[in-house]
Amino acid sequence: MSKRELIEELKKRNPRLNHKDLENVLNTFSECVQKALTDEKNIELRGFGTFFIKKIKEKYSARNPKSGKLIYVPEKNKVRFKPSKKLKKLINK
Image (cartoon, rainbow, N blue to C red; front, side):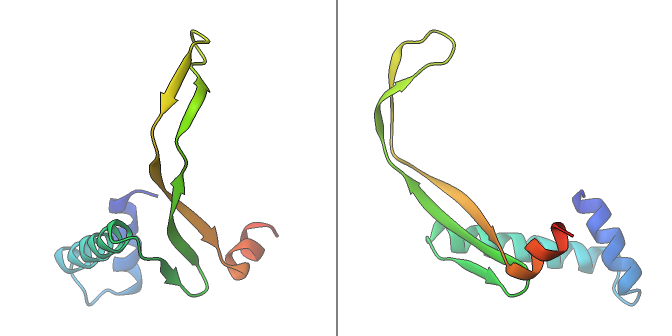
């Protein structure tokens, strides 16, 4: 679902809010999520799931799949998502 489709769905459910207000709500939400993740905080949305940062260790002996040469991969952070039990149940009917 794209941002535009999400705004249209929110508009159907909340006809009193205009397009600009809904876009501002989505932008504010995404900015808050980005800020929390850059501060290495978890974001827990009850009934939906948790976004969190996971540190990936550096690797000295990783291989380039194309050439097969050994390469060094530095430590990095990755965003992970763990769905709630409720979401897992809905997806796996």
